Length: 134
Image 1 (cartoon, rainbow, N blue to C red):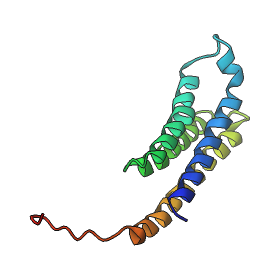
Image 2 (image 1 turned 90 degrees about the vertical axis):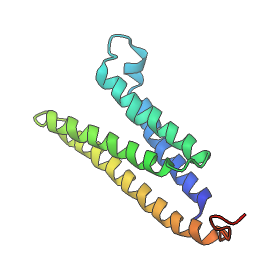
Image 3 (image 1 turned 30 degrees about the horizontal axis):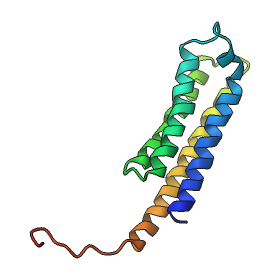
Image 4 (image 1 turned 60 degrees about the vertical axis):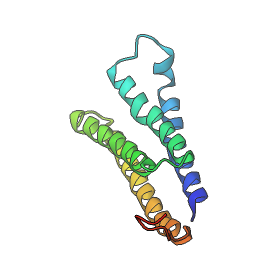
């Protein structure tokens, strides 16, 4: 798997998270009364951050790896905290499934980055310019 494969994975994983959040929050986004802090946090963590991660991966930003893994992990932590807060709610299991799903995506993304890092190091030409030599 090379950089193109990594970009496809980041696009698919982050795009899925953003699409699922938009589909889930479509009613809340269309109504002005239901927009509260939780909805805005979900929009930032699960829509804007993944889209930013796709853009950063496309421009090959050096820290795109940490952004893409971190935004999925942070969203998973958010859902895990929601599950802990609403532990007596009937949707407790759904909140846990959402958090573990995001943690799994973050872990798979980390594995993809690790696998492509080794291949990127093999493909790059050696740097023969030493410090002090021009």
